[in-house]
Image (cartoon, rainbow, N blue to C red; front, side, top):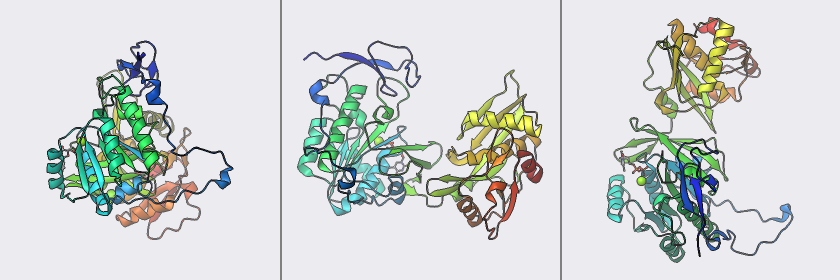
Length: 449
Ligand code: TYD
Ligand code: MG
């Protein structure tokens, strides 16, 4: 059968009948490549094995929650409380960040109760063994298969019926039903679709690894996000030992959860108290440094926000952020200029969240503003103080959700003073913390700087 050609974006999977310089969906340039469409036979699959019948929603038998623990509590939490049978989980991340290491460690635990299959398309079985030795991972039930053919992998899984499967990585898997090269959008998508059918049909959970690709002809994990049940991204700076596992999509749990790990010579170690880690190298009494408490799913993280404000040497001052949204910074800087009278127009502003964390909660607004003001005025924020609060365009400080866990996490780490929105003061019992409430940005600046 002749296969139809099409153009697909290697970043997001957008398809177009003609070539385009810029992907209309994700906006990336020069990522559209020519692909063959899958033949209809390969696409029309069923993901439920028995014949489906429509029934009233209340009569649908409840699914027994039999999640499997992976033995790594940071991973289990991000998954929503363990691995759901029959789920397809994508772990994306930059090459070398530690995806294979994490999954090999998880498989080691799962193999204690039955056979598991680790399919490696990137490394030989001997290389995987070498890595296993380094991690102290062994066990007769952890089976390693070096294979690229999707058909072989599926037939192996159907014969072996393991407790769980890892396919490392999806970009190396290749199906005979398509003529395009391994790693192309159609191959990656087709392989993931077939693995989804395998997982749903057999009830075996499948992890797939996807490398983030910057450009070129290899499809990245974003192409798969809509196919799989759960998308986890493994992030971190290769210069730092810390890694953050973040759920971006989860059909079986919250997407706010994060898991924090430290990469050591013996593999990934869980970091159960990340606040301590994020604050460990904090300079004392340095202008521009402010600690805030951010909620990440069910957990509170204390993180240090650092700002550096310097006179700009170019016509247009720079606004550079790492770990926070730069539009948010621009907005907060405008409020600082208009409402607090700071002259920041001719200043370059750099804002960084120390330790590689990422904040996307408006509760960090007040701390970001104070960090900028503190650096600009060259006056430090008192050392044992934490700050949280959302800031509106009129310079008002708005209440945030759940102030209590933020305060108690700060108390645990030895903070004695907390600057918080006046709207949060109701029903709060101080319990050892000195609480300073503010309702405007001006008040906050007066109190702390
Ligand atoms: P890896 O899991 O191979 O990354 P990925 O599968 O995401 O490409 O991790 C590779 C990096 O981790 C490599 O730079 C070496 C480092 N590493 C350690 O520091 N300690 C270890 O015990 C292992 C196995 C790897
Ligand atoms: Mg790998």
